[in-house]
Length: 110
Length: 122
Image (spheres, rainbow over the protein chains, first blue to last red):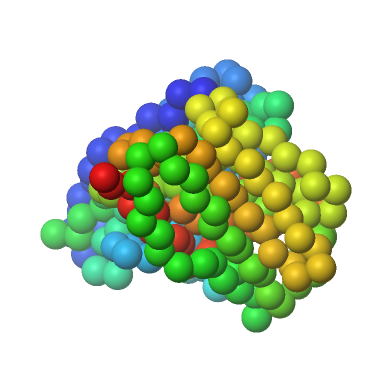
């Protein structure tokens, strides 16, 4: 199972919106609405931001939103803030009770 | 509150085995699947497999077949991940994480342990 493809880095200025893509195949992202996104600050465990493509857990800011089209899922961060500077990973169900993560994207707030 | 507490850092020699523990609290241990995920230094996340603490059933990622064993002890509400034949590229932080739907397998991780650093060095 190959990792889902994400851009290595994305940057934006405070207040701007950025979008991170997560490209898989018809065997994972394209076949299931079980895409999730995690945020990870340096030295910390990942934190669930988005699940089932576009749902937010309780307590997660509505500045984070998710979507999917075909084999590509996307995470949008609106109103970018300094605290959003972190690594972001997508994850998808990949069939046969397995999962696969994305390659990860480093978000820099300029 | 829900927490997943993991065992401390380990240093192992190449060829040895390591066993990492994960002790959840704040929910019924047998009600949720537990996954293991690792992260090499400066690298991304890699899904390793899951265990159903209720049945003991497991599923391992192809990359780890034959080298990983996931077990659970319901009497002490603790899950374990043992990795054998360690190599230098197994140096990583190993996380346990809970699947978010009770009694179901969705590969969505809502709670994570703090991570256990395993260093493989001669």
